[in-house]
Image (tube, rainbow, N blue to C red; front, side, top):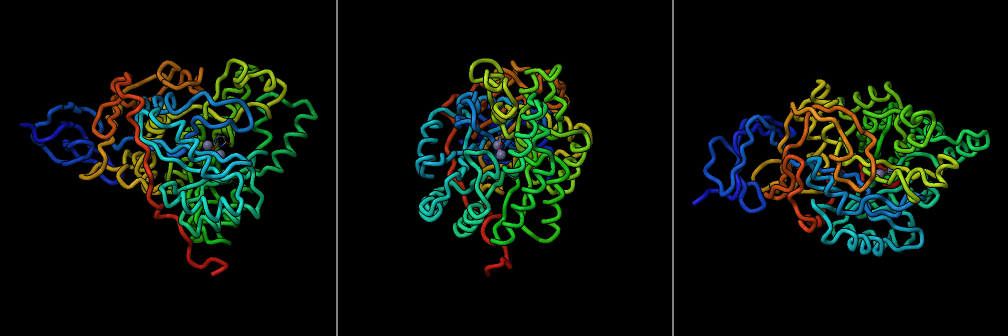
Length: 477
Ligand code: DUC
Ligand code: ZN
Ligand code: ZN
């Protein structure tokens, strides 16, 4: 008789805090034991030469979402989560987006219909609050938070999503009351509109001018405003998708003053630049890189690394937000050809997040393997209330990635498994790649082959974030 259902033998176990030689014994869907020379398993995996790490948790992806003011997304749950497990992830947190005329509860119910039976990996929902009515904030929000939707995002830009300062303050306050964690998209709407109209009038409509229309000052100003509102209401926030030094320094400044302000950065801000938006010669291929905030420059990469190394950023996400390139609804659709403001904002990247952070970070000596685990898994679990995820210890879900730190890969569209018809990282070379992804004890990806089923992923109601609630010393105390 076997001692375990599964034993992963002979690997090096890497967590956010330790690196040890150990086997892992799995019983059912849970880690049962770690140690050398564990007893036999019904199934055994030889992990010699590999790193055994917690499965990736990508806490910022967009799937099956009505577009950011443009055409439909290229990924629903089926293709988006296939791509996630291809890249070593076992959990994703996408967004149930409230339309302006919609109730928050309806948005969440509708989003479940998109996800049910369609997910290759586990998932929870953040909410996007676009209509902060008294009913949304006073009734729906507390009830939804109590049911496990414990985080929400607000936008400081986009005509269909932007909240004014008063509304942002009301959302923060309501989140403080019920313990929701608030994520903030920090770019100032009026400044972007002003710049966009000026650029349009002078004929500067090519994709590259998307980056010119929303420079770092626009992100910095919004980050400062969001931090000030967080301070006023005493409500912690996560500043998401930080692109460069300016916003990063606002977060660092807030943290140095003892405010509970967290930061997230993403793959594109250490690997793409605004020059990519120029395409071959200000042509349509530049639209492949249009996302917001836009990628910046090499100096910004260095600033982002500094923020990662010094702990300003707790999470590293993909902000996977996929659109097609070709076709009537693609990034170069007929309307988008008339100006950058009509190009849908977002790029697909859930499959490349872990390889690029490993390659640029660990393989190049900028961060340790333990920091990598914290940035790609453990911190996401802790901050977003995923209490059984993000670590390798008895009692945790057996969500595991078997990582080959030396495997060299050239990224291609064929490896991505996503719905989009391109990857912005085509031809990008990485060192470090997932050999297998294991979801609650079952191998769902092996050597690039998808072995899991699209009904295998479970919805995860989440606990309250230990980071949420009220900060001490709020102005209204
Ligand atoms: N914000 C996101 O979080 N994702 C894509 C586009 C955007 O503006
Ligand atoms: Zn955003
Ligand atoms: Zn996003």
